[in-house]
Image (tube, rainbow, N blue to C red; front, side, top):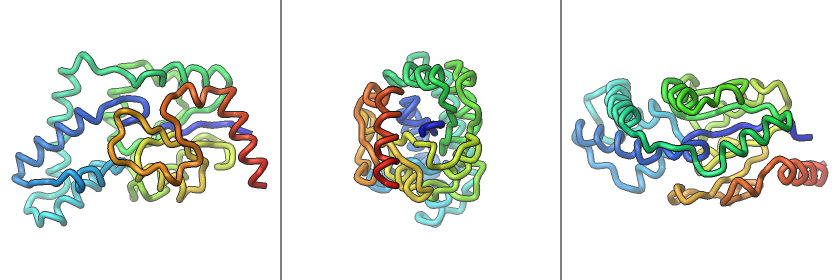
Length: 226
């Protein structure tokens, strides 16, 4: 029986990718590296520190990963504070309220830094709906490693078989698969070149997983797998 839902943030709750994109590319310019589109897209779903470690190795940079993280966060903070048009992704607040009102336990598991998570949650008053928030920046491993979802399921207080994950990235879906947790792949307008082939269910609109629909679908899948 479905008891808990684990949400990714970037690309699922908030379309912050344009701000992250701009912040990263301003950082790339600042340290003098040319990052291809393919390399940049491979970062989706990973924590900032792990991305910066990869950049330092790939480009043999003199700067430390921590220096790159600080530069990127400086640019992101500026864009976040100056962007009055930033909104939640269509339908996600209704979905969060729907799940919460039906007694599901909600946990956030994002590769974003906790400072970024708190900025979003404070701005849109989301803390009231979630029992826990996990940042990949605080963990040893980054998506596609399953650590964050294993810990998110533990934070929910329920078994992995009673949870499902909502993800929009290849790395996030791989992490959910690795944790052996049912995964909904959100293939949205904002997603770019991500692989949803290993998700248990793929959607393009949050209406497809409103509480009554997903709880029934989830129960059927779990029954057939036993």
